[in-house]
Image (cartoon, rainbow, N blue to C red; front, side, top):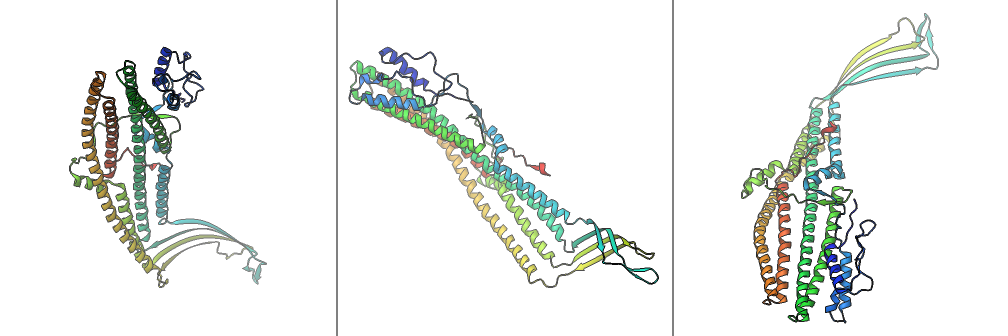
Length: 502
């Protein structure tokens, strides 16, 4: 959908002031929505000086006018009545992203491959039935006196065979167990990949929310400084102030407009990042649906050991490593079974047709063979396989212990960050309340002539800083909760395993 951008809040003020001063031409009935670029210049009358220059010295007033007009022309503001993009909540982004992510689909294919390997392992213990046909053409037939055929001119044999080969050490059964564990490992790997992907989506989502809030704060700052600039202009006209406070107000307003432009650009960058991660195709917006309660798997907020133990029981990475350890143990058993003999059974039914034939031809033949094979020397391959399997088992044990240490540190650091963000929000809310009251009081004092312009600027800067810090702390707190939730193994979203391949 198309969205047109203009600077209605600031432009409307400039147009009204311009009409009063006679320095700005009357605008057209409606601002253009279709066919206009987001970077179209403000609809100012060409060659007309900015209304601010009436109170500035001729030496640099034209430069301030040019800079202000340029900044306004570059700052996108949504037009009234324009189409709005679809707002996504975090859960909606999760569902959309899981359907379009290439990384998720690759992990699903890994599960499918593991399932097919399990099918092949089961097929290895099943008897094999095969049909065969053999045609032989000789150079000539040979007959002996009495009509007996010593060698026919041609011979045709057709038959069916059934054969089965099994290790007496149960190697094939252990291979099936390993294949089943490989399927479980692939599913756990899929969960791990999905959680990591959803966490990156959540990070980009909260970055967009912070950028969106930063735009609101920047625009509110522009509006406050505009009002202050107007008040300073009025006091200057009345002779209550010198030109210096007005110049400071103009400079602060220009800085605020620059910050608003930077906030808009930062929002576009954050949305582009989220769009790429989630695979979105159309324009979109983000919706602030913060959770009302935080689930920590029935653990108290001050019980770190409970959180760590929950992580040991739930983390998909640890489950994957445990499956790998079991596979290594089965590999050792499979390597040991190579020392056992192999039993092979074969049954064959053959029908033979010779040309020319004779009376005593054996037309049909059925037989069975049993073979027991015991390898005596193979150059040390079996011993090397066994040592390799034991080494891989030791590797898997060490990997599990190392992962447990990493998980413990991950849970503890996430927990401390989560608690810190809680305390920071409480303090910043108080700071914002004080800063808001302080700004209102200083503003009233300035109107009464009891406060200076420096007092107003300091109060405004404190208010803006408090708003930004609180906004970042709130969304940082939600992201810290998701980080803790992921570290203890609570799924960020209901994951559907791709068992459709079974």
